[in-house]
Length: 287
Image (tube, rainbow, N blue to C red; front, side, top):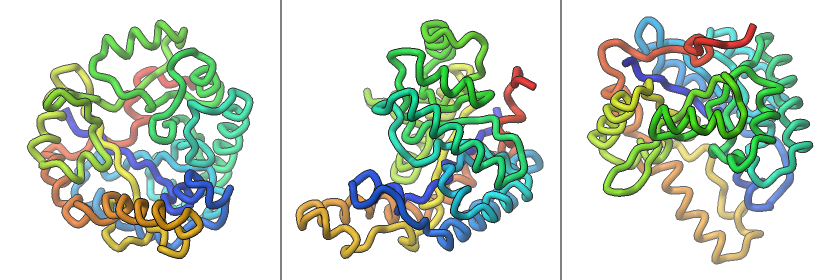
């Protein structure tokens, strides 16, 4: 099966400051995001094949509000604009009223910026409540498909859909496979840091399980420039111990394995290229 590639298009610098309590919100790193987009689009044109030159970008609503011209450019180049919430917040700790408001705000901003209908959704960090149906029902009110569910089998997806009362709502999962007794998802830091043989094994296991193998990545993983890093001064209000800790952790995200990622991904794609936009692959998308 052709490999699916999607991009969680977010500004990690902004989102990390929000997660660490350094601010509620502020300006995004627009120049870094533009450069990342050009790098990703160039990669797709070179390695995506006939269908896979167009991909799905799960964008935060914040980017659409602060850099609408960037979202417009991504859409104009033929890529699918999908939603990655408004802020890059963990939804599983939020109330449904907040979630409904943030979903609506993000979708409006993304559609206004792109001039396209936004149909797909992915929760930040895949963190959406799966103990009850309320949060998924909010997603269903705003979108036509979801890609927030890491799964090991088609049966797991079907059981979850039935338990949550989601009917035939399309769920496009990220494969979650076992290697050496631990679960790993296909994408992100796992793809960067582990050898290509591990990714090929997970791709093969996904196909055996009946999934179209799906890799997800982020803008900061396509660059080793450190353009999304928080500086020492930006981290210093956390106190010295946490400042040093988060400095080390940032090496994992912004340096380790980044330079080799495009070549590793190109080797995984294969002769058939990528599968293309997620929304075009959903068999039962609502009109």
